[in-house]
Length: 192
Image (cartoon, one colour):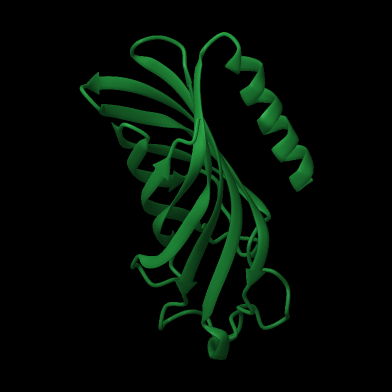
């Protein structure tokens, strides 16, 4: 499935490259994340993001910016988490996601742009043993919305974003809702 996603991404990028100005490159940064829900601590934990970005300029002020990112989300159970459901001895979970944001970038002034758009993330693997019965506590994917700012300096791209999860990522049968949130700061380098 990962190969199909990457192939579709590359096909999308190269289909626009002949008629629009096109840039791409690697990026990496800090991903401060938390999972909102009564079972988890309400604090951000620091992780990382790494991947690649593309920019397809469709005019002087507007561009589309698809990305493929590997990101981590980590969380810790709250002190009052249900001991009948959760394995309190394994109170920490680290989740690895392949995230694909598709952002619209609008130039504000000078090198400053605003970015908005959806993101789909699929759970690659999870280092979590939260549930007593050994089942996975988290769904395999979720949709989020991203918003933030980008600063373009020559070949460098500095981005700061806020991610808010739209889907409930909990697989628990009791109906408790969990949503991911993140504050991301990353630096990219356009090699083309």
